Amino acid sequence: EWTPANFVEEVVEQLKEKLGNDKVVMALSGGVDSTVAAMLIHRAIGPNLYCIFVDNGLLRKDEFEQVLHSYQDMGLNIKGVNAKEQFYTALFGLTDPEDKRKAIGRSFIEVFDQEAHLLTDVSWLGQGTIYPDVIESVSVKGPSATIKSHHNVGGLPDFMKLQVIEPLRTLFKDEVRRVGRELGIVESILGRHPFPGPGLAIRILGDITAEKVAILQEVDAIFIGKLREKGLYNQVWQAGAILLPIQSVGVMGDERTYERVVALRAVASVDGMTADWVHLPYEFLAEVSNEIINRVKGVNRVVYDISSKPPATIEWE
Ligand code: XMP
Image (cartoon, rainbow, N blue to C red; front, side, top):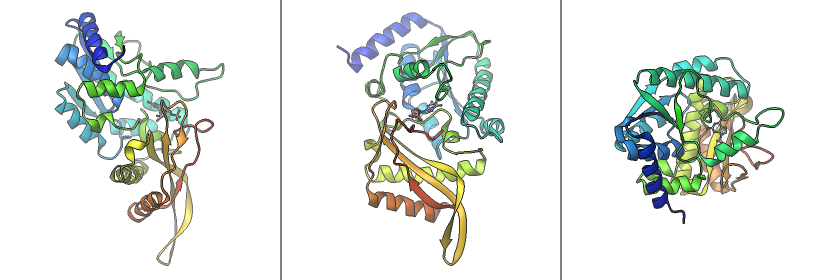
């Protein structure tokens, strides 16, 4: 019978055997999957696991600092790397979703590789790949192309001859969370909504600038904060805001405004493969909308996305 306790015990045993005194390097994203994978490996080999957490400048507001502290509290051997400028430079002027994903993937590999080279005698690369990642990256490759390139699967630079270790490869998200709970990982990380590797870059339609990121971070923080405050956060699989590449006319006092539009998205799902939009209460949406428009300079209109997957996707890019 599959239980989180059995799984942890078995996998930690296997990891100990397989890794011995070897060193493992691993990038953490702040998400559930990489954190749980890291804690499993950490339980097996302790400080021989070297974790790297990159600030790509595309995370949620204050997330880098908060998550880095959580990792330190968990006893992980973790290094935080500020690479914002490198990512913004790589993204400069790009508008095509797949070009943005590729630029982010490349930058990430560069940063990670620089960091990994600072370590000596590392022979393994840890990854938080879970079962749906494996499926999606295989099955969406039709004769034409991938639907969306998930940059967190594969993508090793050739010159890093590391063997890959993926302790969660057979698990679904809910099982990953249960394993995480078994490992004593805090609820603030475990209960967290999925967040895409390319981060806010695929929620800003069009080109990426630091200014747009700052606006979206404020909007997103208001939306997510309200979901938490009203006890709705855990009823939603994933939520976030999207900054649209259009402006619309509004009125403030007796001034005409011509400012940005943001879309709010909240979906219910089991594994991200299909999803329904969540019927958030009107009063809730009204409160969030008011707060966004009153507090975030540069935004004068808020819309709610009522599309399900398929035929839409969860992210807009
Ligand atoms: P879509 O938009 O394809 O998203 O319905 C399904 C789930 O995958 C996440 N997502 C990504 N995660 N890299 C990631 O790590 C990506 O490029 C990426 N694109 C989408 C999305 O947030 C949702 O949870």
